[in-house]
Length: 127
Image (tube, rainbow, N blue to C red; front, top):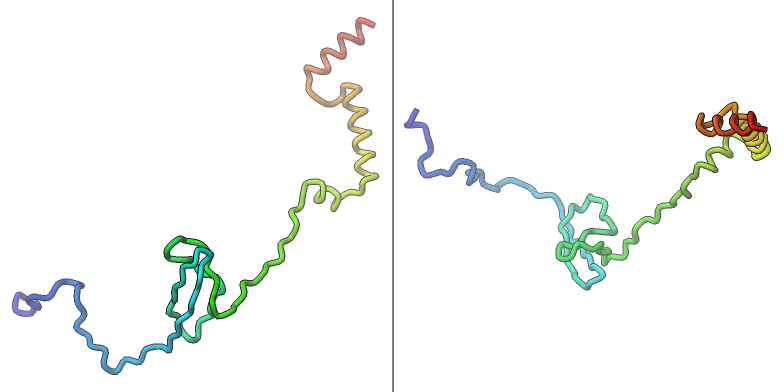
């Protein structure tokens, strides 16, 4: 077994393959410039979709492409509130009727926290 080992070669440190007969993919240089004035280039495949924004390697800011590609503006939906979702299920007239009904039940002591009803019962008994 000792006769078959490669002497002087580091394990995983060096490749013994040569680059003859290998055809590399077509590449392009894409330039970017950040708001702080840092300019840099990124090597990309010719077939790749070039992004309009790339992170600056120096300061981390968003750098824009110098080739004139504009970032896509995404249409943002307005945030739906609880009131909006409630109005999808009921009309305002229905909500007013439910509110009146629930307030009447609360005032009569049929619903709500028990400690409030005990105080109301004492007042009613006193009068």
